[in-house]
Length: 430
Ligand code: PA5
Image (cartoon, rainbow, N blue to C red; front, side):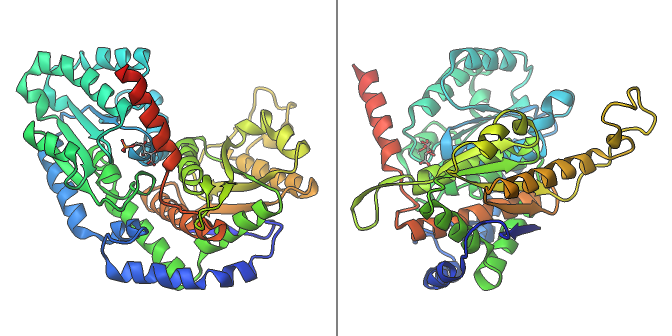
């Protein structure tokens, strides 16, 4: 499903790995509990069959062959995981497959032009069943999400009346004010456990419901996550290993972790990881309440595209980066024909598959990194499917728990995000 190689990571992780064994025992206990009380509660999501039943039951009520668009209204932890999986498996190809439905659309920030375009598109729908509006907010108090919900639903109500209400599903903390308000308005809702933070929630209803609504196989997504977790917590702990490599590289001054995805459709997966790492370990204070300004800055690059933009910087610029190359071993068969229009230009590509060319580019890049003294680790997915993506998501969420432990910070809070939300509301009130 997923392999990790640390041969060129530039660090010896053995002692650091040993230091994490207590924490592994704690994570095993969290897993055995099966409950949602611990900070690491998200580990139990892919094993929660009642959760899956609730999601499937609501999907069977709301999703029909008429569905054309699932619009996810949410931001940050409430939509990045869903977008990561959707774009990896379907969304990146949306433009090239205009007649494939249902499609997923996203209302994230309050960009007026994007919202106006969305409303124009929704105005073309002829019946309410063509749309599902999934409004996701853990807190129920995020300005962008609530503003977008109102902007998108007002014209729908004008056209379809109370039938528009039936096309809305809200996902929020169990028992929250938002859930109570949805209940009072007769809007369907799914809950999430309070201890599961937004950036760890892709395997909660937050991700499962919208992904299921567009036909993705959430059973396989969960299966991939479960297998990865089982193998990490009771065998080869690649999550702890990569956390150790990241922490040791950071200690050596490589404070940027560039995630180089050799599949453009994984860009959103990179952005999901950027939030996961940014919010989890970017902290002013450590667990001893000392001011430390901790963090590793996550960046996302796409192979081979970005070799033609930032490759020069990465190979020739400051030695402040530790890179992660992410690729997949399986791909479709498409080949440069042997009989070419320009046989004398780059002659060595004749008859070669696109995958073989990409592999040569990746291998060439790794050799160039080694020669330039730039450390990296490698993650290889067996395929680009629900199972492998589920494994990757779980691998990274687990890695982040270990990394927080190594950097002595709380991987589960985000006090500085809250401060911008408070200031925004203050300004809007004026
Ligand atoms: O991780 C986080 O806490 C944030 O990025 C939130 O996910 C984001 O601000 C959205 O918050 P909410 O889901 O409460 O609307």
